[in-house]
Every structure is written in structure tokens, then in C-alpha cells.
Length: 87
Image 1 (cartoon, rainbow, N blue to C red):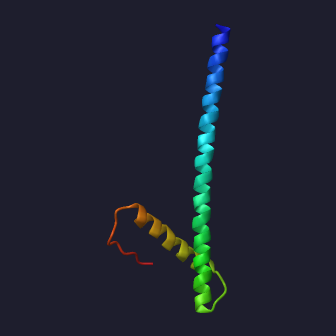
Image 2 (cartoon, rainbow, N blue to C red):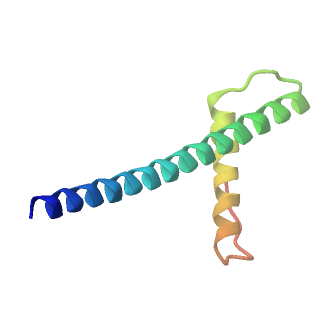
Image 3 (cartoon, one colour):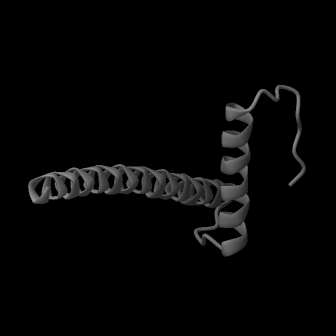
């Protein structure tokens, strides 16, 4: 009886560890994607600023670039083909 309880606890611990590892991997991937979206938005702001002759990445420019990237991601992942955005 006691040996069975130890085995069940060991199995439960293994399952808990597997679930925790899976959650950590998902969280890491989510934060990595967010980092790349922010990096893309910042690069877009810098490219736009260079093109316009201004070297300052203002919060407004960053917000607009990020909004454009998130909208692009939304359209790509949904089946919207002729949907226009107004920024």
C-alpha cells in the first residue's frame, strides 16, 4: 500500500513537471514573439525617421509602427482579404 502511494506521488510529480515545462516553453515563445514584434516596430520607426531626416523615435511613431505590425499579423492570420485600416 505504501509503495503504491509512493509510485502514485512520483507519477504525479513527473506529470506536474511535464506540465510546468510545457507552460514555460509556451510562455517563452510568447515573450519571444512579442520581443520580435517590438523590435520590428522600432526598426520601422528608425527607417521611417531616417527617410524623413529625423533621427528621433518618438513614442507616437513607435505606437503607429506597432499598430501597423499587429494589424498586418491579424490580417495574415484571419481570412480578411479586402479590409482596409485607417490610422
